[in-house]
Length: 367
Image (cartoon, rainbow, N blue to C red; front, side, top):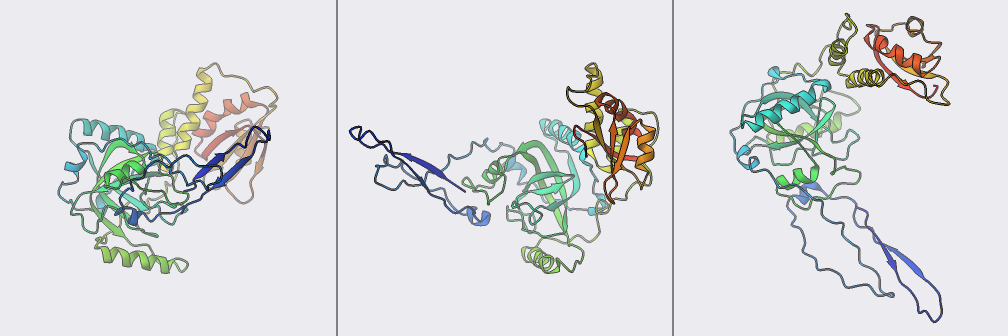
């Protein structure tokens, strides 16, 4: 981590000169999390006030404030290991996650964890310097493993490719990575360079797991082989069947029916696209608030349109009252320009409900 110290020293008032000297001490920006797991926090005394002629020692950042580990966690981690059955996985969409968290919270309040089997994958090597997290339905989870789980050492394995079938339960809490490390018994964890330890993620208790090795890929086979070898070395069981969530089939067609939020919810679940609901709700808020007109100085509004199954964006634009339309290269995205923001907002519900539209969003600038 980068640590900065500003040292201000003043010369004698006799010469009436002000001298400012800045010193920077940059320590090691990365720490191996596995090494951090066995390290103990050093006890340091407060440094003496620096003199103008002495080099200033680096200042350690204050330790992050973490909530105490909940009383239920330790007994939970002593629960028996459960089998992980990939064929029984629940294919949860991004749209369903909030409801899942709420039902998990209600179950935990009754001391009756709501167990579920899901598919997740390591985020390590996927543009994320973290490896503590696992990806799940476009979210990230921070997992705890029950004691005795085959292949578990508290810290997840560093995996490139592949996925996991996890059996366990969401606690309904969102915790940050500092809190996660504290629950593992590591109180002085230091983020790797670029890693975000402060943001909260979903907490999940793993009672059973198995590993789905990645499919062959000439560009990644060396890393994949290393991951598979690591799984075998650690004793993580390999899944014998594929999860139904691995290659969830794309819907043949998008739903049709009366234009309503329920229809948008169906489409959002099929496409696993939460933004559809967000766009619908944003348009609904504008209507409820009296449908404000176009902001001053904004003569027109543009809608970014993702078409479904090679639909004709120009025809969709004419159908929904666009003044002009432009295709973005060879992609499925079109830009529909309306006369003003009012006309664009007015067209949004119909566009979102149209079975030839996979996504639509308002933009305040031209393409």
